[in-house]
Image (cartoon, rainbow, N blue to C red; front, side, top):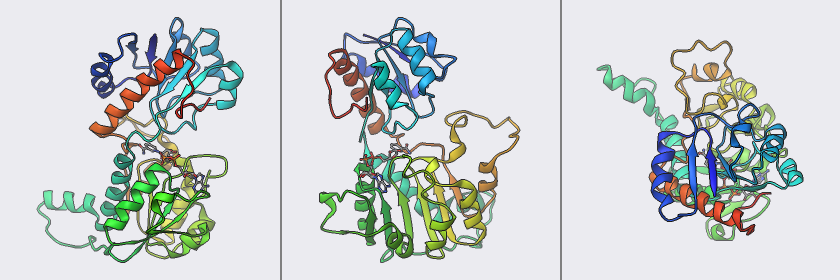
Length: 329
Ligand code: NAI
């Protein structure tokens, strides 16, 4: 079983190579290039390709992969909004993902972002390094006894609910499906009630047509003044232009984003020498109450190991045409 591994980083090799010992039938070739229509033909002769969040696994890419004989797409992530599932099914390409490799990894970053923007830790760090021990601009609020509103209570949202409970917060949530493991401390409410009552709103639902731009100027206007918004899910859950409008209305105590609409092209690249022609992200970063990280929610030792093991098991299952809970096509 041969896998072509797109957009490979050193940390990928470090987590996948040791796992290969347990999967003797699999070999991996790592390449730097991102998967997109222009690079899809490189997969000729491979059984499967392995791709990540910024790959373009749309209809054109999938058609080329099918033409070159690739039978499986192994996503080394939980989200698959960048894969044209209908096209994959039409072409008979199996698509497997790694759901829930470490929900705590993402949830802990979400709380980290909430704390960082609340207490302006990024400012405090730089101030002290500059010999500035003043407290100006650093005042935050207690989370204790405040209300956390969690949107999406699947694996990551549930972990975030547990963390917020640990902080002594009241936890409310919105999801079409109620997670039974949370019923002793989470109160399910409508989305409007969540927006109106929460001091901290954290997004943990997938990007779907129904969730695209779910945070827009209308939803922002329903939020409490001084709310903290955290998005570690997918950038397009939030309409960035309207978020900027909300920030300018002084709606937010803080905004913490691990994902944002413009991230494709940025994710895991060093672009520090480039002059950006037009960037909404740069405008976002001009605000003192915004902190952006570059899609690092998954990036812990435990999560990387789980991703590698599950992806290789997905390859074995794909080879046997075995359907599991990891199949999305
Ligand atoms: P999951 O599938 O366990 O849970 C998602 C939950 O969202 C489900 O309970 C579902 O019913 C709910 N949902 C769907 N539509 C909704 C809506 N309109 N409103 C409210 N809830 C809705 O997924 P999991 O593992 O918790 O991951 C959540 C998301 O986190 C993924 O879709 C992915 O986009 C993102 N993610 C981000 C990472 C990062 O590095 N920043 C890493 C891993 C995942």
